[in-house]
Length: 251
Image (cartoon, rainbow, N blue to C red; front, side, top):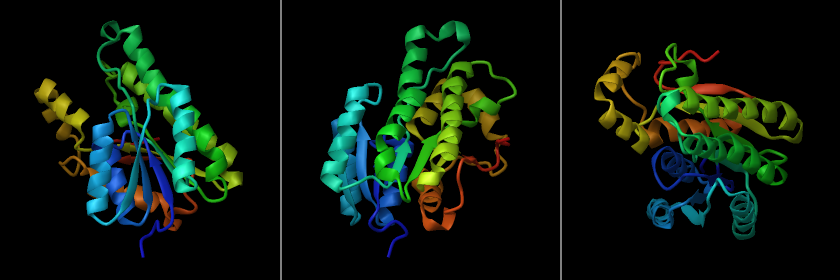
């Protein structure tokens, strides 16, 4: 038996990268995965791979920046799969660059796809999560950089997600809902793009990782989320947990 047998997990941004790695890991432990994202072909591919491994998954296209799209998706997931036991808020457009280089449009997109979408989706899923559900939000250790140059807007929207996580953990634990945030450093498409665009900065950064490697999407990040959502972590609530080989100190 898997650790998450009988659970239904809704994962945004699960068509690739960290979201897909989490989806693979949760499915391997018995969870039925509601695979959400903007690109239908990517969702279908994730579902196909999960099913080829013997798991269960269904695609649910959604634009997390659209409140109506989020509400319809939650209704569709519950209608198709019965409930939602686990919510993973992973989808995010990230506004990177110096303050003078980030446009209002890019910052707004980061806000709408990050903390605002997280806020909305947590509230939409709350009735279904009550009585033993788990929320895992995605943050970043960029907010702990000593030099915030080029990362101010990115860190700002992600730190807002951390604040919302803590609030939900304090307000909703009485209803049996645990809420935590992970801060992963993983081999995602976004990281690959950063390495390509800033190879010298990336190499210097990797030297600050005590384990001298980047996390694997499924094995390092996804499997931790499995444990976090399982009964083994039934008393873990309101925490910010860096999954980065020891690179950041989260206070």
